[in-house]
Image (cartoon, rainbow, N blue to C red; front, side, top):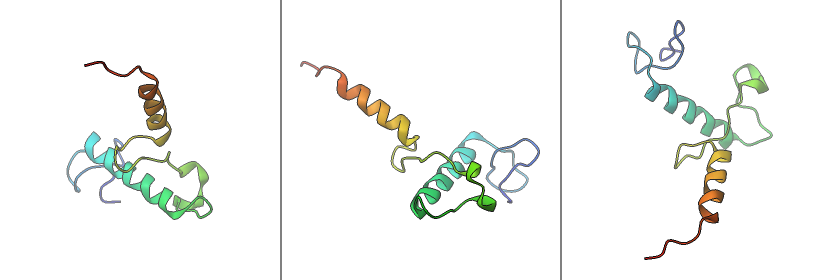
Length: 83
């Protein structure tokens, strides 16, 4: 709660600071990873509301898992690079 910017939205480093994309991104990524680690049947959601579930994030690339799958599919479809 201390990291939330309730007036403008987003997350911040500490109370008194402005929210920024960096802290917002990594807070949401961490929450997504926590939600997916619990398992599909259990709910780690604020007030048990399914709408609070975030898209699953790949912990290595910090990208939505569905978008990462599309990117991998695209690059695999390209012809090999000739040297």
